[in-house]
Image 1 (cartoon, rainbow, N blue to C red):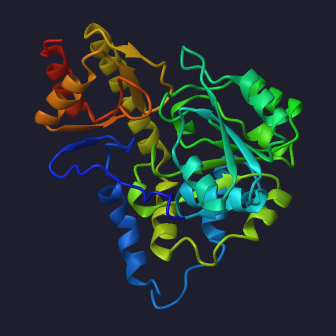
Image 2: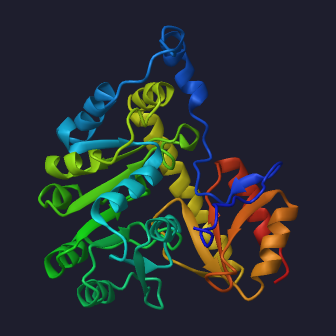
Length: 340
């Protein structure tokens, strides 16, 4: 356990936070009118609803599934842990692609399982053939696919997911944290198989990273298996209340998504004009590289923007989350003024 490193976050006090793929919109003020009276009547001395039945029912209606197809989590991070705990034992093999979300490797270390990472293709495309080969050669028990992928933003097709499912025998966890930003999801595939689960979160498009809520969709039998390792009362009462409320604000969320995607196009154009090489991101962030990456990071920091550096893992690469419209204008002005 001494080799496991605790998660560290960059100090961003006083900075515009463009390093964590968060939404630039704080939706709490718009929710307060509805939730304030409900908060006042909340029996906070009692444990929350064990299975968040009311919230699960609303989620089920939104996605056209049964409540029995949904599992809830304290962020999708917790559900990643539960899936790995349920389907892996020490010395088993889990396969994923690289670069991707660091939580997978952290959990693998914690659970004493072997992580096999398959490098992306040179154009940031996830190597589907490589994933399939690694799963079969290593008798993997779990394959993790992040799509759109963090940090590259790359998206795999439904056909490619179907290939992984048909040509391997392992359980497949699909991390869809950013699925709200694309017109594609894998729900029909997931619900047709007892070897798949899709994980989602309210931390990105919904602008609710601070309440820590995520959920998974799978066949009922899969949900039952993962519930065996789920902590009781894992989603607190206030989180359940706010998550329930935001689901009634679909027009607001869609408007914010459209604004983020519009701003992303503008920022991508500015980065290309600066000579940056961009990954084809399908999410609310952009991964890019430039020989003067340290200068770019430094100048943006001086102008109040905190972005994510991958100097230790992906040479010369930086990742920038998409800000609101006002900060997008400022960011583009700073980028166009750089001497690179």
